[in-house]
Length: 330
Image (cartoon, rainbow, N blue to C red):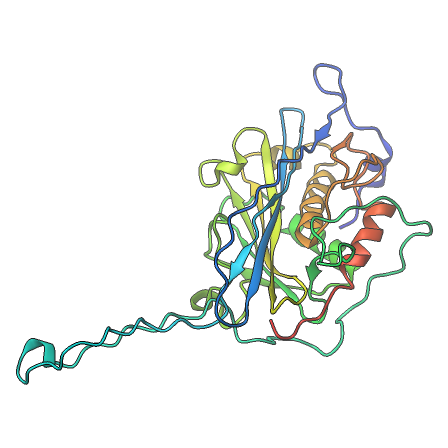
């Protein structure tokens, strides 16, 4: 989406108090859930990382991270067998054929859905000298960031209830920019009836078929999503899984946007560019970026509205996130 050059060249307007509108993104404490005992076969990990965004009356924004690692069972669990006992007497109720316990459905799709033998795209060269950037989570080597699989597309859907005018265009423009700078291929699957981003199952075969659930964008109220109460205007993050001690890979995620606050943002001067930058910041969290301490970067915790696109450090980190592991076994 093109930015208005005239608006982009002018400083942001002052608030009624005479202060320039400022965004503030505030990290939340990381929390770890207790681990689930590992399954008998194909042990895996699941990790969810979330970033938060907030606004005040002058568009004060806040973001944070929640991490909750726990193990993912990878094998179908059969119903428990009945304990052995005395042989039943013919004609007794016990001699009637018993109804077998239902087999629990798998909690993961068949492996390799849409997996290619090579990355579907490549990030552009990073700016000379790079810049400050940080990652939400790292692999076991302590260096390589956790990221999406570049050898398969990242599908996404939008729950449009409560969407403000121009909201879908803002989301799709932000996604296109993140795709451009990471080399990741994003595929828009259209609308969905999946309304809530809370406690979301990452595998929903009855709704999305035999694949990981697509990334969900949802316009929510603070009633539907208490995380958006008060100053919070949005949250975003992804869930990673691994098998057999292999690398962690993000397989899906969510971006929740405040349906009550975004109309006010979009109606401001240069509001479309501001809204796009907010969604881009959340998408930065979605693909694995954390905050930095350089106010020239879009992932800096606060902004005066003069940074509306990814800067050198952001681009350096996003390029690394576009060259992650290909894991067709997932």
